[in-house]
Amino acid sequence: MANVFISHRKLDRAHAERLARELMAAGHQVWFDEWKLDVGDSIVEKINEGLKGSTYLIVCFSAAGDSPWVNREWMSTLARQLSGEGVKVLPALLAGGVPPAILADMKYANLAKDWGHGVSELLRALR
Image 1 (cartoon, rainbow, N blue to C red):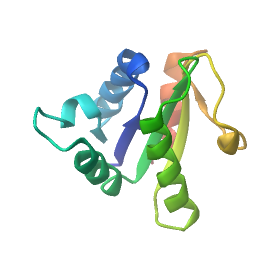
Image 2: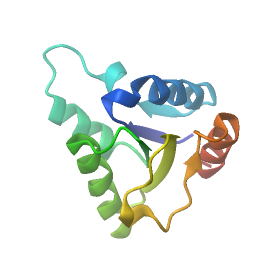
Image 3: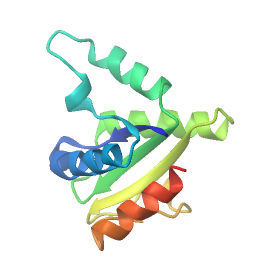
């Protein structure tokens, strides 16, 4: 099964965690910040480990806007993808908003329109 990193804004935490739980229930290994970071941990170190160990990064976007952390996570992963490193960015719309301009040519999972269908599309992409 796939190793999946969930990149999300704090304002989207509830939706992102729901998605993470559904992916785990389908048998995938999921890196979700609130599950992986403990008091006293280096946030940068843990995120770096999560990104290095993942074969997929699901970038969650919504009307909540940009986040410097989320931008760094998906941008670095996209650079690795374009360099042929065997990692893939999967955009997912959680609630309103539009994908970043550089991801506009990618099909995205529209969980805002139909949660179940959007999750099914992500699961199909993780095969």
